Amino acid sequence: MTASTLFQAAGLERGAPRPLADRLRPEKLADVVGQEHLLGPDGALTRMLRTNSLGSLVFWGPPGTGKTTVARLLARETDLQFEQISAVFSGVGDLKRCFETARARHETGKGTLLFVDEIHRFNRAQQDSFLPVMEDGTVTLVGATTENPSFELNAALLSRSLVLVFQPLDEEALAQLLDRAEEVEGKPLPLDADARAMLIGMADRDGRALLTLAEEVWRAAGPDEVFDPATLQKVVQRRAPLYDKSQDGHYNLISALHKSVRGSDPDAALYYLARMLDAGEQPLYIGRRLVRMAMEDIGLADPRALTVALAAKDAYDYLGSPEGELALAEATVYLATAPKSNAVYTAFKDATRVAKERGSLTPPKIILNAPTKLMKGEGYGSGYRYDHDEPDAFSGQDYFPEELGRQSFYDPPERGFEREVRKRLDYWAKLRKERGE
Image (cartoon, rainbow, N blue to C red; front, side, top):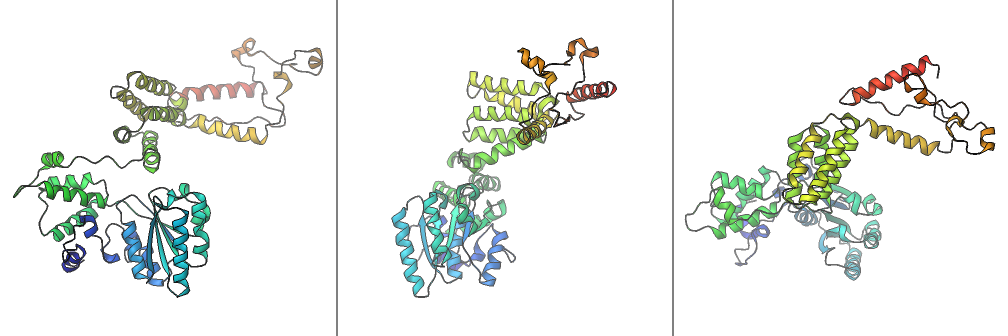
């Protein structure tokens, strides 16, 4: 973007008081930063424009990554009329009027790019209303969402659209935005190098947020004043972490915590635990998830893990915040450093599958009680050997239904306590073979 274009975009000719983020809105796709996988020489959108094959799209990504700007510029590049609505403020009547306008335009040979912000907020019936105008070419739909389209959008709508992922802006892209902001303002940001790096970190990879913070810095700085990190922290209050407890931020961080524990990385696990607590996640929800991790990923490799996780949940419930958070941290570290096994988890899934497939089979009569003479006459309980009366307290009988045959679900690894369990199973298998069962 040239300096003249920047100043024109800034509205200086009219003296309009526009926010910095709006003044810096790119005038062409090449000026969009941070989305090279879409707009670079081999990017998905670049290829579409090159072949003139733009179809309906869904832009999925966090705020401040350029979704609205790219949609507007796509309309310009493809000579389509740009129309924008927001699912937050629009209803059925607004959609009908928008479709009627697009149809009238379509009859004159002019196309419409309909940009729908927060498209996931439309209900299923409203989402379905887009299908006819997409199919007959009345509109080229570009929907923007911060939520996972797989969960939030109708399958029919998704099947007619290409989902493109917008990435959070990295430090290099954010630094470029600050350079452009300084060019537009005609003066440098009053920050030393460390404070500049801190400001970029405060933006949480959100370009719009970065420019808003930069404006606050310029407003707060006195003549010839340069902020260091400590002063910047006082002037610009830290932004709340980007985290919606009911949406993707919630699921992404709990997934990261779970996988860090499973991967035996206590440092990464503590980091994600701290992020969730800092963002206001319900600590007892985290406690329940730790209990799940103890069962799924540690199991009998360390039977104490479940006890520790349950105790941490109870300790938080008793102490509250912030004292109880330490119990969650201790449990997190214990689980991350414990030996891992999913043998019981896998065995239970396999047993459940077989039970569903062959669940109508009758157990062998030797292990069925015979409370009546008729049942005794039918052989119920006949031949049963009481294990405590057998050598080694082990009879070695086959307890599976005869039609099913003996099954093997549980395969403990040579780790942690399950090393001892493996020895026992091997010993019993040896006895079973010796006794001909």
